[in-house]
Image (cartoon, rainbow, N blue to C red):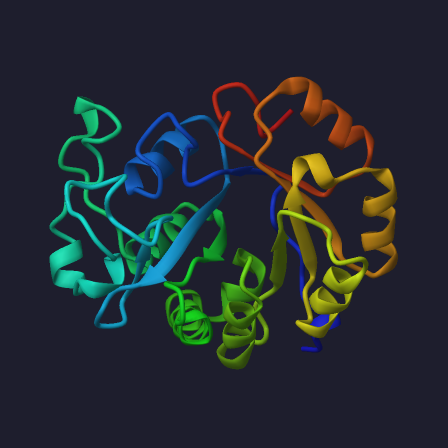
Length: 252
């Protein structure tokens, strides 16, 4: 299948890090909470353990969301899997472990959910992380990967790595600014991206039109208020990533 012919089946509403802030981010508990609110598409952050196992974590370090300290990439998966990634959020989630990509794949596949995997590499490991994540997605999803998974990253090298091992899985370039000039568009095109995902404050009707003319989808993160969501919908965006899974109905 040519890259331009990839299917696009990501639902419009995407639950950020599982269920935003209602449960500890990037855990199975968060995915279950998002699903309880009717969401059928989820975003999560994936990086590699010291022994190369893809698992869910946003930060480079463990300090914010676990009792451990230091770089996550310095611990093996055996060590990481025993950490408490829930107690920082609330006592109700104490003992919730960080999940592997394999565990998340089992959950979303069993429930026929879609997954936006943000490749969040440890500094210096972008291409390798993309390669490993791409390989694992094809192993875990098989033939359904192109219609069930979207790769995204702020790191072009991570997307290049994913393209190397899983070229048939759609990719999206994440942006928090549109500078310099038009370089971002050329970069997205050179990476064979099907989407550009910007901070919602950067998106307007002109940018939506420009992306559509370039045959790319226009997505935004992280929208949590109704006024912004309504404005973006009126301006033609193709998808919204949100923390507010309890305030936005994904079926509305």
